[in-house]
Image 1: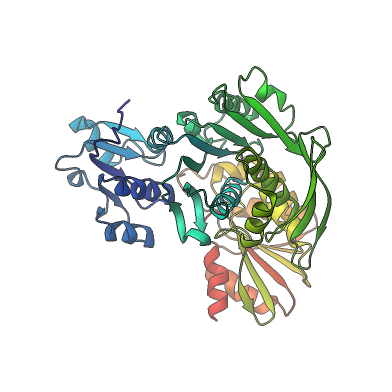
Image 2: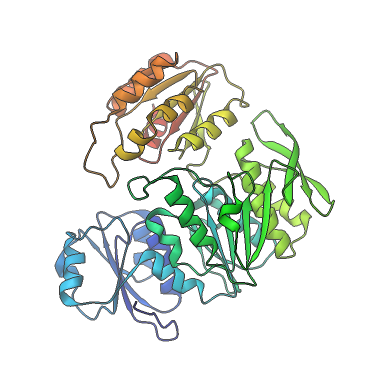
Length: 459
């Protein structure tokens, strides 16, 4: 594997530099004095920001872009071997790194690298941790999978020994990391276009946990089924949290305000209990907050600082984000694209004052929709009315014989009102006609479904 020497900055080319993670890594390297170039399909606020910092960016991916004195090319799992730049890289024998390998090498430059993993909740938990470290004035370097308002983006470059990043299991990318503190929030079936089954996924998380050194710490949810299968034999310290008093940290006495934001009692095994309040809704965020609190305890951060950070954290973009109100209808957007995430979001919404709950769902990838069809239907049935858009294919080209019409049939079979309309324009017209004052409307999915709510607010 090519090894970057951070004491001797070189020329790094990013294929797909406009991605939220890739752009962040490019920004860190620019700060370290590296020469950065790359390509993407079209301009975006992220690419424009990089260009302002002297990155050279090509729009459109062509073999001719890889000319000159490029020392190493960085690419993601979304890049296929028939990509013209990837092909040119191979033909010219330019050294390469995956995004995860580059991120792993960066982590080795810090004394306390923290990696936040799990099927769900990575972005929110990483953001909570970021808020706490900033409030504690620890000057961390942060790499977040979403836009955090506090830092005005997804990357913050600090000067301290602390580095915090998300750690995604897809294509086993987090196995290229070098964490000192690891967090596992949950483990469920997902990314079945890569993993064989849940046991394959659990094995991947076990290998991630095994990366931690003897003087490292794993923070893991004790609510994960048979979590000891993940932790057995690890040389590091293991700290558990969850809903049961059997854990090192557990919660009790949850109550919600009128906006579904929880206050809960955190209980530590040493007998110390404290009450914390969150500005983000739902019981799932109590779990995210507990993982963040344990990390803060490890770093010696006072509880008052933690609570102040929680009160300042109102969420990241596309995570239960209140977009606005139109004719008395509250419009929220959420990134949920897995049945468990949908369930958590809709349960949180049940605490929010509303007349009827509308969920406008855009399924994400054919493989995920087919694998979890009954589970999607059950989760979405927590809404009063469901409106389905066409499946967002992302990286996939084979529809596997599945469509949103199949999901509609499953939802109707469960007795929940469900409408399927292929285009956003049709959905917007339908909602303008059927939503009324006092309703709560949630656009949901990892694609571009957010545009529906934003368009409604402009009409």
